[in-house]
Image (tube, rainbow, N blue to C red; front, side, top):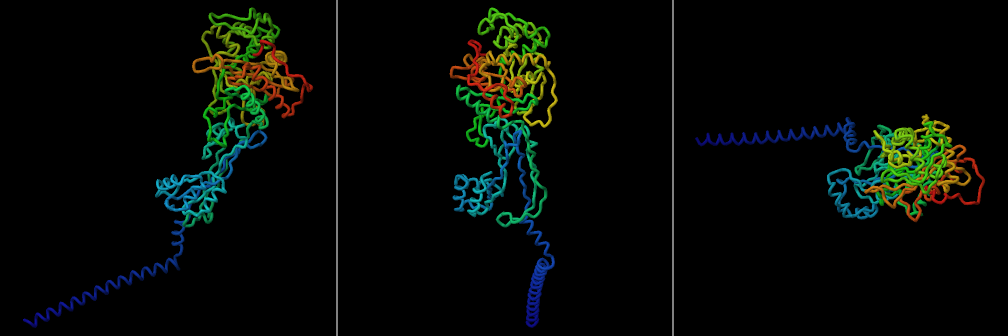
Amino acid sequence: MAGQGNQSTGWKLKLASGLKAWRFGTVLGVFLLVMAGIGWRLVDLQLLDTEFLRQQGDVRSIRVESIDAHRGVITDRYGEPLAVSTPVQTVWANPSQVDPDDPGLTKLASVLDLSRASLRQRLENYAGREFMFLRRKIQPSLAQEALELGVPGVHARREYRRYYPAGEVTAHVVGFTDIDEQGQEGIELAYNRWLVGEPGRKRVLKDNHGRVIKDLMLIKDARPGKDLHLSIDLRLQYLAYRELKAVVEAHNARGGTLVMLDVSTGEVLAMVNQGSYNPNDRSQLAPANLRNKAITDLFEPGSTMKPFTIAAALESGKYKPDTIVDTSPGYRRFGRFTIRDHRNYGAMDLGEIIVKSSNVGASKIANDLGGDELRTFYARLGIGQGTGIGFPGEAVGVLPARSQWQPVEEATLSYGYGLSVNALQLAQAYMVLANGGIRYPVSLIRQDEKPEGVRVVSEKVSMAVREMLKEAVARGTGGRAQPNLYTAGGKTGTVHLVGASGYEKDQYKAIFAGMAPMDNPRIVTVVAVDAPQAGEYYGGEVAAPVFARVMGDALRLLNVKPELEVSGTSRPQAAAGERG
């Protein structure tokens, strides 16, 4: 029995030893197979199938980047730049690669004019992300200085920034873009789709720090925005801006507007406002100064509408230029409302009504014609309608329509109360008288071909009214509107400004609308000054002298032949009590 136990124990020991050897061999065999497989794979990747490693490397280092497209250039009618896009640099960071405790961040913050604490906080907030702006659209030299600090994860890329060479002089017309070069105001907004470019794409090779080593392939080329040529003549724009700003400052006025149109095409040659702003520096921008008041602000045109009342009378066939209207005793009463002239002018023909700016004479004609006929004539001139200029925020104005007109409503309509216009509408209406009765669409875009106009007033009537306007400047309320070397015609207007509680008792808008030269009118200009102080507030005292200076210089710049000899005498003054 003892021998059998020993044999059994020996067999078990041999079995256990054999199992250990088998297990060891199995493990060793598996290990050798794995090593052989790894070795074979290394040989395969390094010598036989190198494409795989290359592709994997490319996946980690090749990126697709966008190519910025610059926005189209805006120019004046002669190609002078009004808005251009200049290349700049934007500094950005990959927060996952930037150590918030990196001592180089202090210098980086200083170079980029950032707060070290806020920079650190932003990096912590963006932790785990791969992109964060540090400073957008800065000078390339400043971006290069930031990159030379060598802070890991900090990079730069090219972008474009909008620049406006004429600054505040063209601000209200051109407008501006936001930081992404999307139009926000003015022409920049109205023609944003035309001006904006289409970005491209390219495949690039980057190193481990995210820096571009090489451009590999162009996927899609960037398409720059289209250029836009405005009708504005920058020379006349500067001239108008200078004179308007001077009169607003001289009279401590609330603001002002000036519009200048080409009589034969309807193109806007100049359009300026006060106050203005510099689109290149909007840090101190006042929202109230953003409005292009020539288009967005409405006002009652006052006596500047009297020439159209006279034109409507002549068109009706009931009146002729020498028709006499009795304005005695110098006022008219409608219940508790009284219409007055500066004095009793007695019997006058139609021309004298304009020369003397008689409210009584104009109102009598309006009551005779009727409100419907007068309104219809105004509408033919474009009053109460959009100009079609396509400018953002254009105000259409008000031209009332009554089922039954009250006599006082007809009377006030004749001298510009009870309706509202913007300065551009008023200039368009005067353009009809200046060019022989044709109404052209107004445009801020240069017209390479003369637009098709519509006759709204007979040539005979327009010529007759032009002669009356010439007399209004030569010896009437518009005496101070006479430019040197040229004859001019136009009409003054002085209206109460409208406030929150109705008409402001002591606040006025001084207006002058006119044309020159009178032998063949080339330009129509409207000047309006809001709330002039300094003692003078009549259109003939405030707005008319601006018209004279602007028109005289503008016609010389346009090489229009002078009609008059140079004279050392002062310009004619309006007669006492006839200040419009």
